[in-house]
Length: 276
Image 1: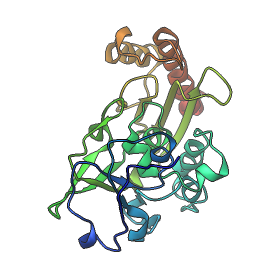
Image 2: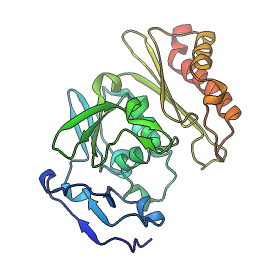
Image 3: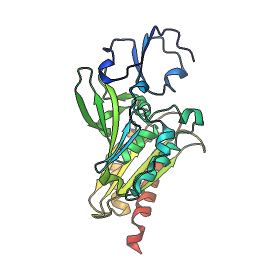
Image 4: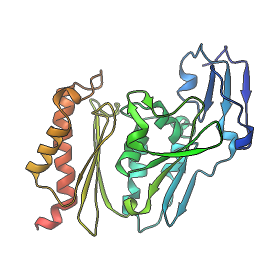
């Protein structure tokens, strides 16, 4: 869609060239949502793709994902074999049912900044305990946990003029065993519940991230493998019936049922070897 209110497009080549933020500005990664509907309040676009950020960077500390990394680039990532949880990157990419055109334009950062409960890059970041690097207009940086970054449906911690620069996933989390479960009303529908569980292969600790079925990501941690009753009790205590998201993609009661069911499936998948 043409945005016929836009008067200027800025294409900075470095951080120092990013113009001071003004009302009517929008930062553009891939623009797949921005150009999908009218934006009559916008007057200027700042194109972040011209900053030339490296899409993915592997280090001993973990994986740094640029906000401008596309789903296609993330899906094609070749990551170290000692990171068994890395399969979640491709798994979560496939949760966004878009064409190859969308995959080659839609960005990880854009998915997070939209802050929709069903955002698969939000689910990935929650499941792998990511932190977000934010650039402030005054040149300073701040890091926030994904669980603090997403504050509600289409709400996040970005302040006026701030830019999501990258997402960092710790190597220690990528080294865990991981399982994902997803439910939607139709085969190719939007996620109504998406859970990711990880198991620390040394301590046996279990961490569960609940997304899509709730307004914002939630995390449940167990220092050791919980039994089915303990897991269910924690979920029911942590998410009251009125705490489940309600929209056309799933009723709260059904989302609640699927969340509890899939949490148990994940627990079984990660710990069934201990019961043998």
